[in-house]
Structure formats: structure tokens, C-alpha cells
Picture 1 (cartoon, rainbow, N blue to C red):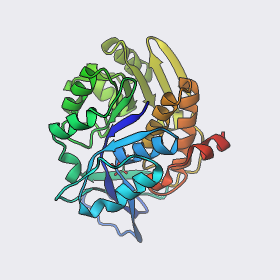
Picture 2: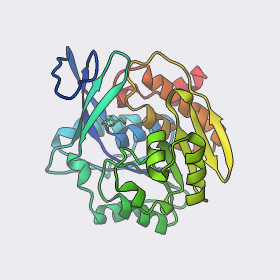
Picture 3: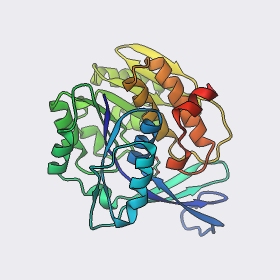
Length: 293
Ligand code: RIB
């Protein structure tokens, strides 16, 4: 079993700042760093470092060769990545002294998916495989429908949340990975339990992982709940914490771990990522996670 990830790849331009810039304000940043990122890339890196077989479906520009290289070094199959005649996606990220961030994403090549490519990539999937996607790419509704029609397991991390997502064919999804903001946007509910109950009512066969930041995470499926604590760390950079969680959780399921074990490792992996700078470079190997537990 494997993960076929239709995911964004971004060049992250990261500024360390005293505080996140406010509207109308100009501040200066003493440093600028370039990192590999993009929710899709980060999730593939996490899943691969957690030991899963991952095929990454995505687009970069000529400026994105280092993104493909990092993904390959992490163990993901990048042989189907396309290099297009447009700039790679990029993100402008401010990270403050508490490790909190603010992210502006510019889609670039990530917004150049076409249906022929999606169909061709889906033909690589086999029963039991997960198709994973986020919301930094285009044609996601087509992908959800097509993957579901092929009988594949579809995992959706609806991030970043946009107004159109609640009207997507979400009934095609078998695993949602959402934070509270995303859960509220999909269900219209604003407490943990109400969000989970509404997800179960609307998607009775789907599993939902609701991530709660420092409060941990909850998994719900058919009325059953599993609570997962978070592991406290000194936050250096929270970028890619959620992506790390997603990749490790999926990889755990594919490796045959129980949801409890997969959640626990995902939580530790995410804590380790938060304790380090950068997006993809901060994501640990499975051995580091297991040693830390
Ligand atoms: O989730 C973190 C990611 O969001 C960053 O790496 C950035 O590229 C944006 O996509």
C-alpha cells in the first residue's frame, strides 16, 4: 500500500521577526532563509520519513529543482513530477520569537494541474492506496471524484481553508484531517464535540482527525473517539507541524499501526518539527520519533 500525494511544492522564504507585521506597519527582519516547503511536499516528506511508500504528483518550475531533490532524498518517488515553464509556488513566511507564523502563499506551478495528468497519476494507484491532497493546488474536486470512483481511500487536509471547500464533493473523502478553523468552516459548528458530531452526521463512513494544537488531537469514527495528547516543546517554528502530523498518521495507518499508535507517533513527530526551524527540514525520521517516545 502506498500514498499517492497530489500536493503543492513551495519555496518558503522565511523571515525571523520580533512580531508578525500588522496592517500598515513596516518592520525589518534581520534574517531571511530559503527552505523547501508547501503543504503537499511537507506531507510527502513526513510520510516518507515515517517509512511509507510515497509517490508525489505535482508541478514545479525550473527554480524548484531543489524541492524535488529534497523530496527524493526523503525517500519519495518524484519520477512523475512535472517541471513546467512557470515559477514554482512560493510562500512568504514570518516566524516570530514565539515560533508562531504567518504565511502568504503564491500558487505558481501548483495551480497548473490538468485532468489528463490527474488521470494518468491515478492509474498508478491500487486498491488500498491512499490518495492525499490539500488545498494549494487546483482541480481538487475533480481529483476527489475520480479517486473515489476508482475505489481508492481519499484523505483530505482542507488547508488552507477557502470558501468553496464546503461545496466540494466531500462525500468522496474517507479521512479528513482538519484543525478547528477548518472543521468549523465545513460544519458551521464551533466546539470540538459539535464539529465531530456534525462531521459524523454528514459523512457517516468517514474518519475525522481534529487537530487541536497544544490540546492534542481527537480521532472520530462512527461515534468512537480517541484522544491524543500533544507533547510540550519549546516552539522554534510551528511551520509544517500539521503537515508532519498528517504524513506520520497516514504512514502509520499504511504500516498497519493501530490508530492509537499512529496518532501518538504523529503527535511526537509534530512536536519535534515545532522544535526546529523551517518546514520540510524540520520533519524527523521515524526512528527519532520512536526514540523520543
Ligand atoms: O503548512 C506549512 C506550509 O504552508 C509551508 O511550508 C508553506 O509553503 C505553506 O504551503
